[in-house]
Image 1 (cartoon, rainbow, N blue to C red):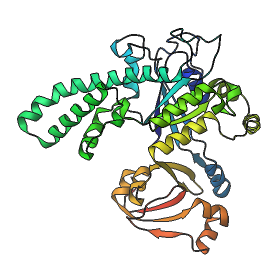
Image 2: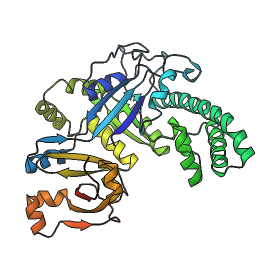
Image 3: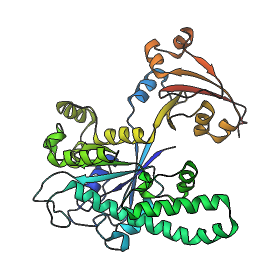
Image 4: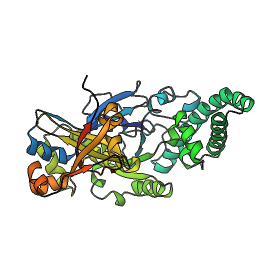
Length: 371
């Protein structure tokens, strides 16, 4: 279950520069609108230092980290939902992602043009992009409503009527410039709305693209502060990233990168910040499996039981789950070996009701037959 996110924003805000940096790709990032003609997808490994420590203990033949997939689409402009520019034709590429990363310009530069020639205004930029996302979602739901409403009203199908009710509420909310995630729905309507794949239903992370001088103290940057205030008012996360700095850091050794970040008072790259924020808003956690053959990080949703986490590994493991042996990463580091953890009484045998915690190391016992 890899994490996926779609990157949106106006042209020339640093989307593709950031994408290139965090994916170490070499996609065109030119200083003119629509430099990104096709949606670009890159998969990166999640930087989890716990994996490195597990490798030191287990000395596995293979190491597999959790992954984060990014899709960068062309910059959105006013009228994109009606076919202006290039962004709208690619919105479908991010409808199946887990979250939206909205990159917003928070720096001045005489060399890098704003697409509309106006002064830098983060909140206005956000509202402009949000409106295009809203209009695109309205178009999707209007077409769906036309398709399902008559049949639902004629047959009185319960599920169909729930879907129609959700569509009406969502369309009304979006027409009043609410994001779909802010429209009140019943639990049944929320479940039905998952099939719509609405962009405005997805949690959003606002990424303020600041200049390098602002990175260490972003709240001294009035543009970033305005964006952060807007995000807080709307229940969203906002993080500072310097796309240009990330691009420069992607070209140096890990040691030089770490040394430079420490000089700024941090150990986190922009990718680390985005990953942490995405895990937070999506309620994602990590469990591990470890041994001589392989150390692997697995992503799961908070609240998953042991069988559900077994299903993340393989669906048959959930179906034929028997029990699991569990101990924590912290205990393994404290005692130094799996044997010492067991001797200290810190290894548990758990059943189907056990709620897996972040950092748990699992050994699944299943009746599933090997194929």
